[in-house]
Image (cartoon, rainbow, N blue to C red; front, side, top):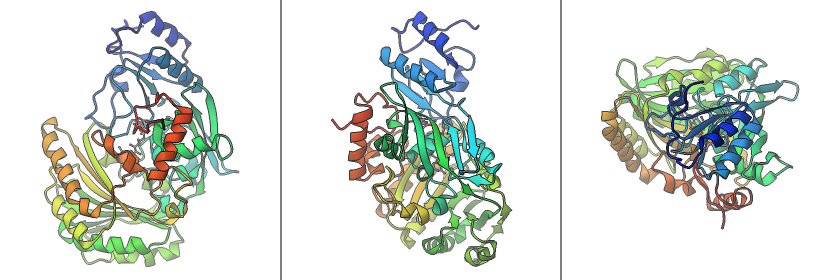
Length: 462
Ligand SMILES: Cc1cc2nc3c(=O)[nH]c(=O)nc-3n(C[C@H](O)[C@H](O)[C@H](O)COP(=O)(O)OP(=O)(O)OC[C@H]3O[C@@H](n4cnc5c(N)ncnc54)[C@H](O)[C@@H]3O)c2cc1C
């Protein structure tokens, strides 16, 4: 056993209290100075450097229950970590307790009912491998290393969303440990208010230990990336906009500004056709035959290939600063602004992405879940990534300035999972007023003391 280092940030936390707590846990408890502590507090975004007093690596829901009880008894701040991808670093707190769910990776797939019960510690790549073994899948994120938990609780945008809805639209139930320490099931009949709130309301209502998803048959797809040089980007993005506004549910395509490994600034359309193969050509032809195409890498792919196509471009440990908004319009003016700004992007790792909505996302009623942006057409995400801390000022400034330049085309709304550290005053913008007020009432019912507040926080109603 390594020697215990002093717990920092919580001077009144007695060593014997920690020992008793640790002895009762199935998982382990890490303190500053112990082997593994620094690895356990590393997040996707290297801008975040927080030092919790305890990192509790839970093995099951009872471990989670006890960790909540311990934090409450000692009046400690509590954060919840699943995949560790949240750019605002909400998975960690300074000096408090972190419930780390990354070991809770149990998954059971039932091909007969087309459902999966998945532990909160799974990443999408782990989830997809298990479900694709049966030819099944549900909507996950664009990058397969992201955690299923944080992504689903905020809504969950991904390749399959126009055909099968958001990740949260595919939830059948969750198991959740609430602030009163109870392990509850929330679904359409049991605690329906809580079930409504966790489908978009983030980590505000308790610690979700497992998710039950509806699955869909997903076989071979036609997918890949069509690349354009940056000087063709205006025309190509206008075409992309027109194609996606008229597209059937089976067509999903992102629009991304990026820098090639050779250093060329490019415009790319990652695309996936999930309809009948004989219809693919008709729907993909306009993009693939545009006169400005530099490279067409579209080919038959498995869903696992589609899901991990961009993973290498988003390694953990880079410095990240993001800004995002839903767009009111993707007008020719808005497009010209994006192209002009990307010419001056300071880091070769940064990207600007447009995500299209519509399809199955838009057929869910605004009040059916706590994700209200059902009629949005496009979301803008500026993802600045760089490696040298000396570059932070210039990259953050460029991101903010581009976001400001896009404000005439943006709405006040934003996707909650894209909010960064300086966006605390935009949480309301992640919801419409009716959804926000209803979330506050549910919060009041299940967490009146706002114990779960290291998140994009929704304060209790009173
Ligand atoms: C490279 C990259 C690509 C992304 N692509 C997409 C995308 O395509 N689509 C999309 O929708 N989003 C995307 N995101 C955003 C992503 O949804 C959020 O970052 C999300 O918070 C990640 O979830 P996580 O479990 O990995 O995060 P964590 O950092 O572990 O958790 C984030 C927060 O979620 C809450 N939370 C997490 N787990 C639980 C739990 N079990 N119970 C209760 N609360 C919990 C907590 O408040 C926690 O602080 C992407 C992020 C990155 C970094």
